[in-house]
Length: 434
Image (tube, rainbow, N blue to C red; front, side, top):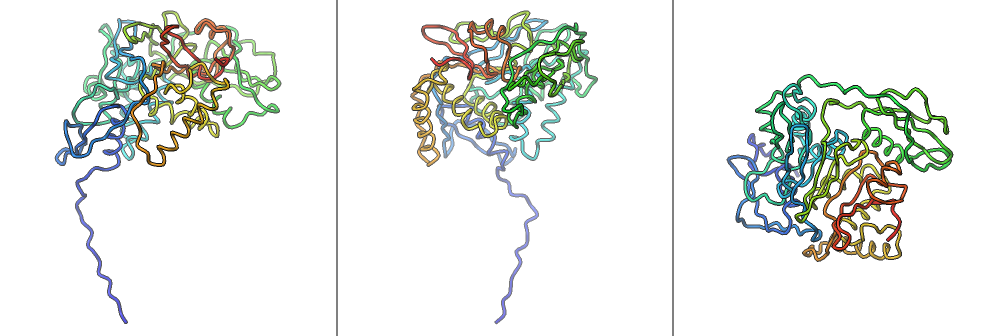
């Protein structure tokens, strides 16, 4: 008995249908535009997805919780102020280290096979701007809830907060910036710094004098966050303690407590980039400063996030990478507080375990295919800020910033607007239980 196999000729034409990046961008916008029925349409002529008024299959992503509304972030720069609309954008990042932590990794994933080209454009704008004519001071993440209809692209999600020489600060799209300024130009140098003694900060507990992979990753994040500062990492009994120098060069007198385990320094890529003089949030009509004039840039926030989409897109993947085996628990607690399940101050109270188990059960039900219900939880958290000093800042800095006597301060801090207490900041971990 013989068999004959006929070959099917391969088509030489690519099918005209959405690919991974097209579906990914619709997922990103569905995450940003919560509580609305969305309709997406693929343009056969343009090869892009668009958000349209009506379509066959709606997409609906409910909000995680109802919360106070952040309506604007005001940056005070050397040449004036610029308002970043809280309904157009969902996060604002002004620290070099924070841009690398949160945005670069996000866009590398979202742009898929186009990642190298897209990141090259973003690198050129963020690091290669012509400092003789303009300074790029911050990046605004344009996944805001106010978007209505139109073509979707990753290009449009990048907002560059620019300070032209002698001009007024403004927010420009990536494409607009590329059409206005040359990129990849000479980079500036850091301003002169005054040497001085190293300052001892709170460190990490290590068992038997040996840190594990999570501690070493935290050290890496710490050194990245305090750019332009030489760091000694001293082993003191069961503590790995950072000593922070005021310049890129080590202080003349090294620490005498313990022994040197490591030393390191991260040099700013754009040392001439001006840090914001002030960052002010407008929430429910009231204003609250997260950066004030005269603050040390390494001791205050380097970014702020204020929507469900921004927290899920940028914070969750980052900490899933940093926290290793502890990442599921860390992210569970962070989301429990963000979503209003746990009080922001609560860490070790008797109620925490039961609440987390309830939240975990509901999450598992959603994984089993149950449709997510509309948010019925009230949260007092309206934003999250990230501190550049990795896990901890000094006790004095903490007390001045938060009015607390606690020693440990986690770099992720929750911004709340309590009906009775008003504006209050909470460390995600490290505070006494409520």
